[in-house]
Amino acid sequence: MGSPAAQRELSQLVDRLENLAAHDVVHTALGFHPEEPVGAATSLFSLTIQRGKQPNSRLFVARTALAIARSPLWTNAVRRFIELPSALPCCLVSGVISVPDVEHHLFQARVATAHPDGLHLLVLDLTSASTQHADAYTDILEAVAHTLQFTNPEPSVPKAAGTSRILEVLL
Image 1: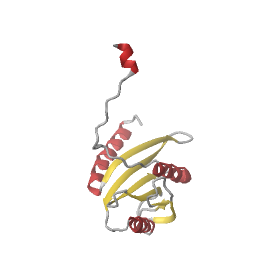
Image 2 (image 1 turned 90 degrees about the vertical axis):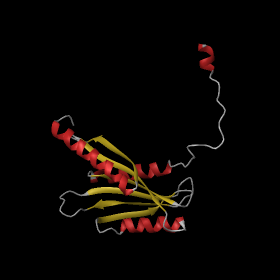
Image 3 (image 1 turned 60 degrees about the vertical axis):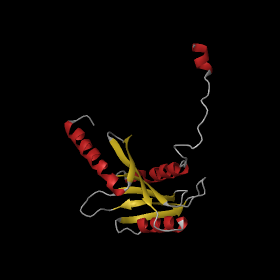
Image 4 (image 1 turned 135 degrees about the horizontal axis):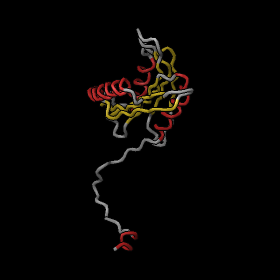
């Protein structure tokens, strides 16, 4: 990772990730995991938010998941519905992607779920060239989906400032 070539490649990757905002991607994260015998496996997590095109959020989620699974790039795909604590509709699609003219295959797990407002769709992606870890990556993305919470970042009712017992002792 410390070589000039690796630094250059990482810099190019970060530059390209910034271009994803034009495709409704609002968050990305890179994962670096130890790989045996020596090296690192990498993964990319992204969160995309799309404006709803279907008044029925369950139907919109199902159609999105079906479109993902029907992509000609998938060499095989597993798809299933996930029951979230929020009871929002949610589908998971995972499998191996074969990109034309690329020797190595990629693993990708994608979760499509509705926003509670019914006007937006969220798509969570976890992609890696480490296809041997497909089951673990699928489990990770499903676990992330179960942690989704929708709260207003700017509550309309101001909260009263609490007192700190530690601050009282220090003063």
